Image (tube, rainbow, N blue to C red; front, side, top):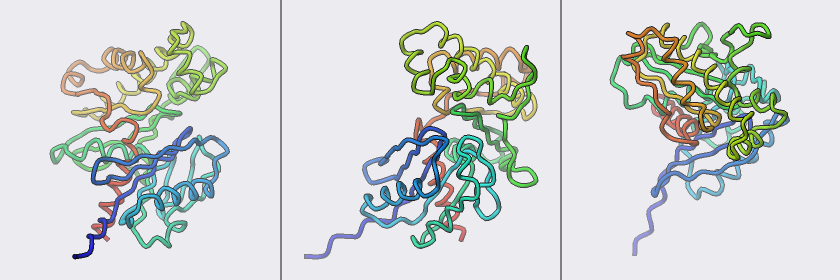
Length: 288
């Protein structure tokens, strides 16, 4: 009898979020996913342990590892800034996992989502992904090319300044889940629970957050004239949030630009960012 064939190398994606760590690997029968909690006190060593445990349980070699973070990534793949997980600043995942002997790609979480969401668009497309989670992030394609900016940091939609009765606020502060929950004296899980119970104050806060996000979406529609905008992130799944965002975006977009833009929920569900990180790492491994 011949030997059983060795399992093919896997491509693994890691989504480091403000409240959760999500790890995903495409396997023969679908996508294997594992989750763990994160928070403001999360440190690199804890993440590295969780990632290594996940890889050890896959039972196959890893060909490419993609790590997506909610912040700015420097030229060496180091975390330069990360508001929601401040202890990650300075972390270099490629160095931490050098012993694995595989390609390691580190990128912003919205860029990872963009990789996954737009991989099947035609050449020359102009499109974007906006993530409404703990905070708000975004990434864009313009004429088929990633919009990166001078240092690769373009897309910080959450820092869009908006006037309010209480002064100028960032879009993060108006539409991000962490701020919506804080205004109600709770956390993300508490906000979701209150919305699920039909709590009037929570529903109102979620609708207002969605309307604020819609202003950011309208700014993108009017500035970039995209054919596609996809909205993802955990906060965007709260009942009423996405619908409020769509109404607000349409109300504040130029009608001609709005008509040629498809605004939809992002595909890939909760694993969107992790799958995009794996896709980016696979692309890097092929070009190395």
